Length: 168
Image 1 (cartoon, helix red, strand yellow):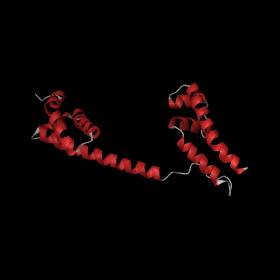
Image 2 (tube, one colour; image 1 turned 60 degrees about the horizontal axis):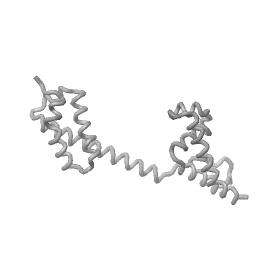
Image 3 (cartoon, helix red, strand yellow; image 1 turned 135 degrees about the horizontal axis):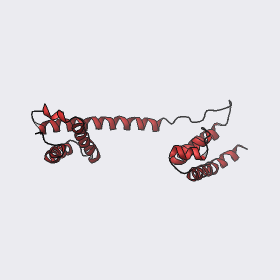
Image 4 (cartoon, helix red, strand yellow; image 1 turned 180 degrees about the vertical axis):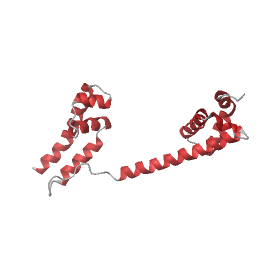
């Protein structure tokens, strides 16, 4: 009779954790790697049938999972950093010679809005959704959508009014 996943976990999880801790000091990454190992076994219990040494197999699988997760996290961090450095232009000039200062101030203000207000504002202005539709899309009440929209407009108004008045 083959040992259950629970028995395998009880027998080897501490050793696997200690090994991964020596390889990496990121506790979250280690826990994710452990989860990957045992999910892999849960999905395919026959994996251990071909292994000569269960612990060695789990250690190698854990090490590979840790390395893959670290690589993915590194790649993700790299792309997130690049995204932060390369701020996309949200608003293109409508007319040639349009006031770039106002447009840039508007873009900066939009980027500085909290994500939930920016999402509501986008759905209302660019997608022309009702507050009920926005609420359904974002899984919030229509009243919450409306208040986030008002807060976003107030922030835009406060930041952009001085820039606009400067132009006059």
